Amino acid sequence: MLSKTLQEAINEQIKNELYSAYLYLSMSAYCEANNLPGSARWMRLQSQEETAHAMKLFDYMNDRGARVVLQAIDQPTAEFESPLDIFQQVLAHEQKVTGLINKLYELAVKENDYPTQIELQWFIAEQVEEEKSANDVVELMKAIGDHGPSLIMADRQLGSRED
Image 1 (cartoon, one colour):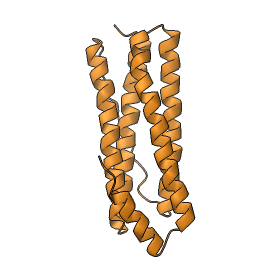
Image 2 (tube, rainbow, N blue to C red):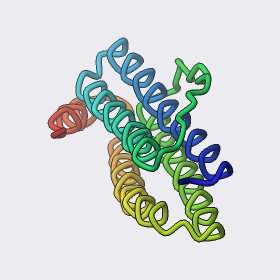
Image 3 (cartoon, one colour):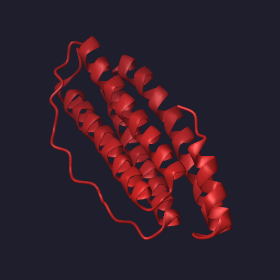
């Protein structure tokens, strides 16, 4: 059984993962409205991935006999300055999530909860991938700028992302 402290912390992380999904869906809507269908698809897939992360924690809590208590999700940002701004915000958000996962892992270590440590190792590895992916797009956007044929080509490339 999970300690009360870990249950509360994992419930908080479920909320954070769902907020991430909501944020990326908002970014997808913005991209659609600004004729960037490839970026919109990238963000929509990212939103689905974050929902899957929340459900992975949801299922883990249930497997451990813990009580999932869903929390309110804040409204995400809806307006952005540019495609570069969007992906810079994605990178900053993923870095924040990495910090949250690391704190959750530290709590599991403090409580000697080995199964939770093992579960969270997957999330730690996932965050390395998430940050790299976001950083790659930020660097691409910096190199090409926010307008013109290069942006159209980059948008098409982002739209080719697989699930």
